[in-house]
Amino acid sequence: MKRNAAKQNPARRSRLLPMLLGAAVILLLILLLYMLTATKNTAGADLEGLPNYTDVKGTFVVDGLKYEKQPMLGSPDAKVKVMEFADFKCPACKKWTEAYLDSFIRDYVDTGKVQLYFMNFAFIDRDSYLAASAGEAIYRQSNEKFWEYVHKLYEQQGDESKIWATQKFILNFVKENISGIDYEQFARDLQDHTYMYDVKEDFKIAGAFGVNGTPKFMVNGELLPDSSYEGLTAAIEKSLAE
Image 1 (cartoon, rainbow, N blue to C red):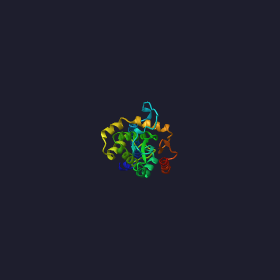
Image 2 (cartoon, helix red, strand yellow):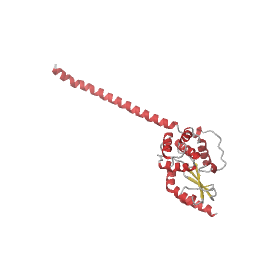
Image 3 (cartoon, helix red, strand yellow):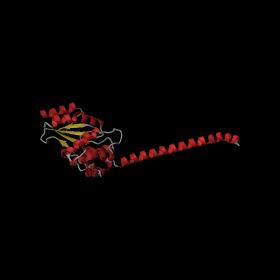
Image 4 (tube, one colour):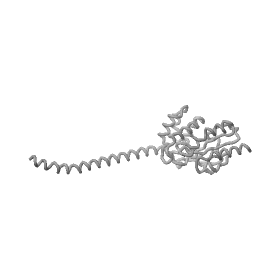
């Protein structure tokens, strides 16, 4: 009997091995399916809070740059008005801001030569629109805090090719980085897309004046052919000399 049992064990093991391997494969497939479903659900939840320009209804009339509606720095008596057009997802906008904005403010805005304005040209993706809408919501509470938002959001800018400026990200970002505003009001404005009309209006106005990318600059209403710091300062100096 013992000899028969010994002979049967290898055969039993040979049958069990494929069964165990099959079970392991099935468990692995279930795990992969769960991970894919969880990833899709997370991505879907992030996309749900993102606006579309097609959802923003209203009549858009392009009758000037509407300086009075834009965040600004500097004296209203400055001889030169500079308008920057930017998208918060734009790597070149981040680079320009980090390299030049502080020195530009020091040399031209603080000296009374230039009044600097910011206009959204949110075009890269749907989270561009949301980041712009968040900026508008902050600006309506505080012009000063808007410029703080500009600096700090560029510092945490994500990959241009990925959706990163989601509602969850922006709400957490503002809560942790922008103090001195009514956060609850900001959160409501962001979630309700309160200022998406203004973001789309900026987009329409900028496009009507020839803006087709970012960053772009206007000096006293004239769109510059390039975005170099040298080109911008040369145009400013020319206007100051006139």
